[in-house]
Image 1: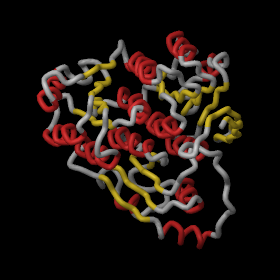
Image 2: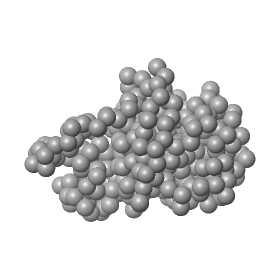
Image 3: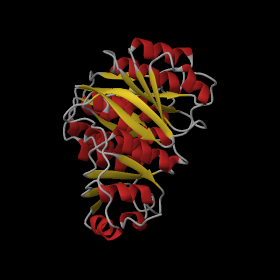
Length: 345
């Protein structure tokens, strides 16, 4: 059903045409305010659990296990850097797959066991050989069979990879596209699960450019995009980029004073089901890269938060929107016990 939804993001007011479904996104409502004591009681009733592991690759495996027990397609991306895996998240969920992060040194025993357990029909590597070495293709085939189909989506740089991924996976079109800067990771980490909820690709752009590049504009034209959701303020994606996208259709910017406020705005304005909420550190990327696929698959929000506390805006949202479960992504070095106890910043 097509409806026109009005959103408020930070200080900007915008409207956008979107497709909603029973399992997708509904316009966020504002429930009656609760007394402080009621909010405290609501927060104390929330169950807090943690998905952790020995390292970022182990955490990603455990997140994959929580996502699906079987998958026709498994995506592999570098866990040593963020751009390729950022773009991969919405594509993975669109194909009902799983994302595993791999080290440049090769597939670990734990990753290999999980890959075999998932029993995929194909594997897609995101990024060129400098990100995911060709030796990993050999290792995949040693686990899954000598002729097992392994594809690679690569490009001249992170932006080219992002565009190629969107064009390949969303080849039938994408009326909505989320976009974030590819020079840093926080805004795109928050945008990933939101893009999934709208069945939209996440396209990275060089946010410092004075206007959107011709390659990106060409992609949006081929995808028949009519709404572009920019994630991040003008310091992340320039005003010139926003202005240059006017010919595409509706342009919305989710902005905030910092990475944590941007995360809150994106979740508040694009998602409605807060029964389970995922938290990941906003100071590093691996846990949220893998966690975005899990959160997106379940159509639940993923907030990036400081390592030592939870922003009051996030806690207020959890208390007022019926959150029953909070899942921390990563060990206590990433999210301290203070986050586990939902300590307010």
